[in-house]
Image 1: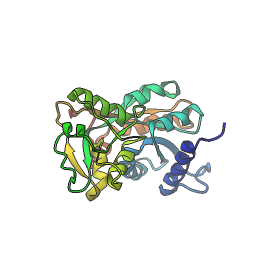
Image 2 (image 1 turned 120 degrees about the vertical axis):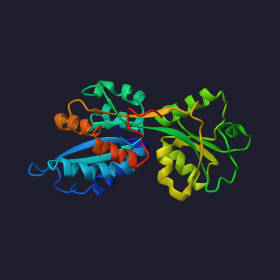
Image 3 (image 1 turned 90 degrees about the vertical axis):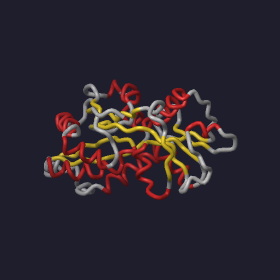
Length: 259
């Protein structure tokens, strides 16, 4: 089956991610080297995954992690095409449920976060509250309804009883954030943890806790993967204090902590 442009972009980004991981490259599939787990992960986990890969290599010298980032529909496409993968790490349980026929067991929540309004540096359009997003003339970016951040965003609007007319729908929270950072959108709904990655390139307007939602990040081993035992061991490690410390460093809450 020929690749779509979206799948070609995913494969290109996956290759770049693999080349960025120490110990991966030519010869990484050799029998003399460590086992390599391919982890299909949400793009919102990019920064913390870099540190997780380093820490787990020290914890388990016989295992290396190869993170390949993409949007939920792209990862589902890869699993349906039986592309090699060992672990699926998504940004909501709905995405996991859509891929359940390809999973080796029930998913485990490994991190949580919540949503915020991303605006340009200094908040030039003077957006002060969630209801300001209904103002005419504002360019609002949101996640598409088929991706986790889009589902969460629509839940927030419903909780607040707001009808928001957005100007663009994006494939991920990072894509929403990019719209705001580039000035193509006046505001966008993203994860709090994504906003941290923007540094001074974006500002934040909080969403009240009584209408905000908790975004859960579940992980599961992929059925018929080459290293199912190692995949389950890695998922268990993600719940340990050492791993949770890394998640916390990047603004994620531990699974048991309320948001």
